[in-house]
Image 1: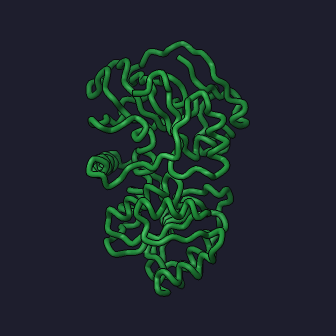
Image 2: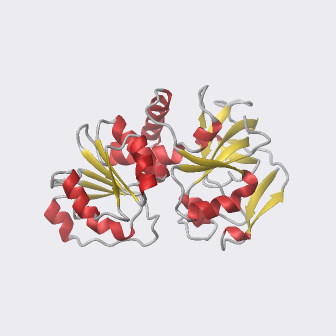
Image 3: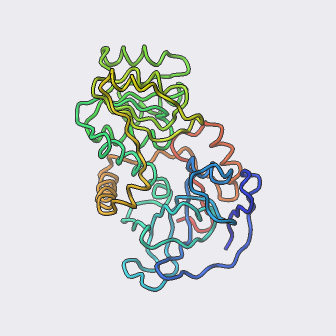
Length: 329
């Protein structure tokens, strides 16, 4: 097998493409021939030693991937060789093969392409957990989505619309706003050229959004929160902008509003039955055409460093997916 190996987490330039022995699965594991692997923001952080999870060295980055099971470890009975699966295991995806915990593999129904599957679990699970579970979003409510043209942002638009909400998508360019409109956003805000608070006020008749979905953080957090509706729920999803913002606590008091943390990874570990039910609902929505990953582009696995550069430029709209061309079906 071949894979991108990180031996010194000082950045993507230190990650190298290497030949390695093809491993055999241990108890509870499966070996997957990787067809596609998506690039997520944590994949950028983890090779810089800036992510909260710090794997033992050396490691193969690539948190989310899809492919075909080649071998089963002892005790694995619910999966079979030749089965198409997707997996989000944190590492291992940027190569031709990997070992994955069988319990973390999501069997793919017929008609679920590997590229879509590799771009599915993290963004849709995060957004479903955020909007359905943490925010208890109701039909007819208004949702403001920051960073709306990114992977989690596009998934949040689709889920909010599937739930009957009115969606305001905020993004940093006209092209990104146009993408958001094309997948269902009712209104858009280009916060590079428009005043965020004034535009929110105009679009909501002064009421403000009931739910704010924020995977960005940084400078837009406080003006967004100051615009929230009475009893609003502010979803803290991530900090793609870099700086972790600080909010004056009196704002929560004055707005009667809640700041709600969203950590899907720990939810999946601590509430596995609820997570399994959620993933089942998401698979049904995909089959019904209610949700579908927005793919910015696919790139050969050999071009991982170029993909990191494109992701870091913040030009990606939706998800960027690496493919193993020789084994892509």
